[in-house]
Image (cartoon, rainbow, N blue to C red):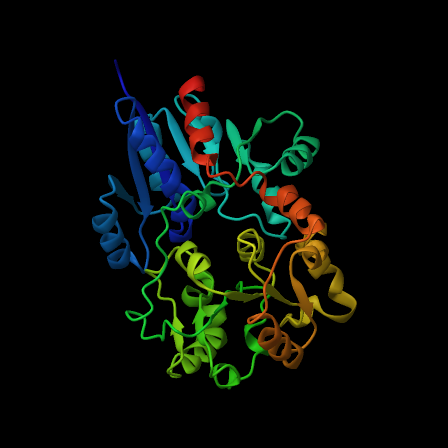
Length: 359
């Protein structure tokens, strides 16, 4: 029988942690599926080449979205996985079916607006997300499958990090600081941030955009300064996946990132920094722009994380929580289920089952 061809469009490197669990599940049924990762060229091509080699990924390179479009129109795969919006889907749909599989379950309204261009199906994480999307886009198809990015942790496949290789002390508790790029808390942190927690390891996992886009140079300068402290490891671009850090760290500090939901789902304490560095056109009379950027679910982070309004409050709370036993209340569990769905480790399996039945 002919195999079905599945292409994963990797416009951004941080799409990989969501794609790879699905790819691994497809490999279980390799007699039915051929896969290919389509990488968009950019400033980190050498790093991507090492990842391809390490993961033994079937791959192709494209110059940009237009080149990717031409590739899909020419090669006509059965399914194309997309991490975001994509142009001219009407042409692609003449020959191929498309999937949208987002990389996070965060509080930004872009989670919902990514469906402005309709793929054949969009896989979502929970019944709540499904119903909201169906209300906004009543003519489109959505399937509640769960959050496949978490499958490797839940199934015991994620081994975590090697502390000694990172130059850290494995006998110390470890703080994970995982801020987003905007709106971010990075610029509101002290230059002495690592010194405030000198009794702990600190792993800093910036967003990919913080490390790659020109407009976030001030963030990179501060992060570079922090990296000079001996108790700090700053994740590199090739540390593209957050999941090893989620698995191995004891407490997370974050801000407007979906990482808060992911870490809390592992029943570990999360500090939610509500003190953000906002551009002038997001403050004062323009504060409506911030509210417009963030979804209404952002305010509910207090159900799973400890909100703090200042850097000093954050210091005190981290030192209190990191040595305490942590558990989730029923309200917290309900909220996590609302946004991240049923974390049973079988989301990737459900995706592959869908592909098998609808190819």
